[in-house]
Each structure stands twice: as structure tokens, then as C-alpha cells.
Length: 124
Image (cartoon, rainbow, N blue to C red; front, side, top):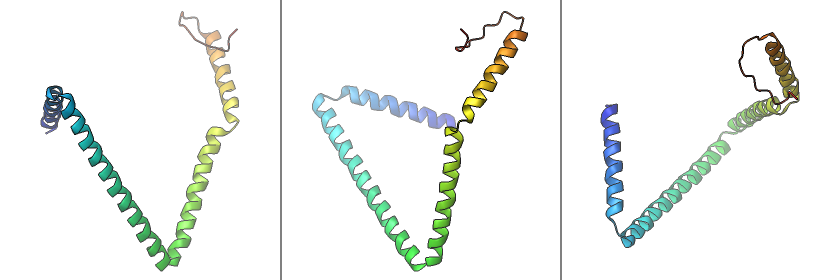
């Protein structure tokens, strides 16, 4: 089935490319405009559906106040988890960790009698 799908994609792509090459400039411009209109329509519809969903969710939360407290608890948990991840990547521990790695590389380099190339920008 995957082979048929890939063959169809390849054939469809080649057909589209050949059709595009056979079109004159007016036809290509008309097709671009048509495609732009369809894209704009799809964006408008998806925005409309998203806004309707948000309205529905707001109404549902207003009708169920206990869920509002749970939602705020979840929001706090996600915010705390996000802060933990950000703190992990923004902490000063990386300087210590990279210093430890440099020391380990230096010890490996001094113990290594091979002709392997070790690149170290910190070596002077």
C-alpha cells in the first residue's frame, strides 16, 4: 500500500509540474489567485471554528465553576513545569557541567597515545 501511495504521489507531482509548465503566464496567475482565495477561505473558516470553540468552552466553564478551579490548577502545574524546564536550561549549572566535560576531555587526551585528532577550542 505504501508503494502505491508513493507512486501516486510521484505521478501526481509529475503531472502537476507538467501541467504548470504547459500553462501560460495568464493561466498561472489565475491559478495562483484561485489558490490564494481558497487558502484565505480555509483560514477564515478555521478562525471562525476556533472562535466558536472558545465561546463554547467559556460557556461550559461558566456553567461548571468547579472546572474553572481545576483549569486554573492545571494552568499552574503547566506553568510550574515550564518554569522548571526553562530554569534547567537557563541555569548556571551548564558552566560547571561544561568545565567538568573539559577536564574529562583533557584527561582523556593526556591518556590517549593514539594519533586521533581531538578538537578543543579552549586549548591555547
